[in-house]
Amino acid sequence: MTGKLIAGNWKMNGGLAANELLIKAVLAGLQTPACEVAVCVPAPYLAQTRALLAGSPIDVGAQDVSGHDSGAFTGEISAAMLKEFGVRYVIVGHSERRQHHGETDAGVADKAAKALAAGITPIVCVGETLAQREAGSTEAVVKRQLAAVIHANGHCISEIVVAYEPVWAIGTGQTASPEQAQQVHAVLRAQLKAASAQARRIQILYGGSMNAANAARLLGQSDIDGGLIGGASLKAADFLAIISAAV
Ligand code: 13P
Image (tube, rainbow, N blue to C red; front, side):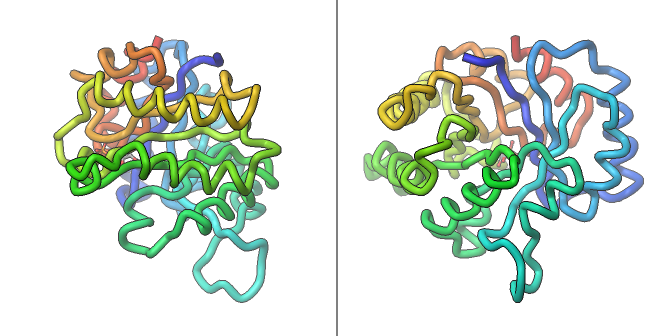
């Protein structure tokens, strides 16, 4: 098992001035981290973020990537373009994109494949809605979502990162309990292990209202290898506290 990864997902937040303040505050408070750290920023800010983080232990990430290489795909950003900006990670299949932009399991698998081909680590998001949890289908849903990515990327599946993000816990302040999260992470771990002997190395992150107060208990679970942090990654003190909890 590699170390933990704490990745901020800024979502559609920020601005040139605010980004600089936030990154400078995080860097000022950052001791040598015991874990890997990344921030996944809106695409227009990749160059700025890369420059501000140069020489620091924090990697730059993006929030989406095209499932195509190039051509007539207005508005899309290719993995090769992201690579030119020093992007190390890209989030794929975030529930907000599945919900609001009609992303399918197969489309998410294509995006992961393009990222991998460009040498960018896809952070593959899976997670159930509240209705699916209440219907008892959590396990089936996350396994189906991950299976599509495994099916399309079996040969290099050990290069991905997985993020379990229960939709009902995102931005709601309602975190999955450490036990609830661990239960799903164990299911995902077993699925990955069955797909690849190298799966021990795959980091499975938890995301959904992780904050300074609950991070240590979540990150203390045996199959939780880090966090994908939304709101709390926009506040330097909170993001730093979560990084410190990832030992
Ligand atoms: P919050 O931490 O704001 O709940 O967001 C989680 C998330 O969606 C990260 O990708």
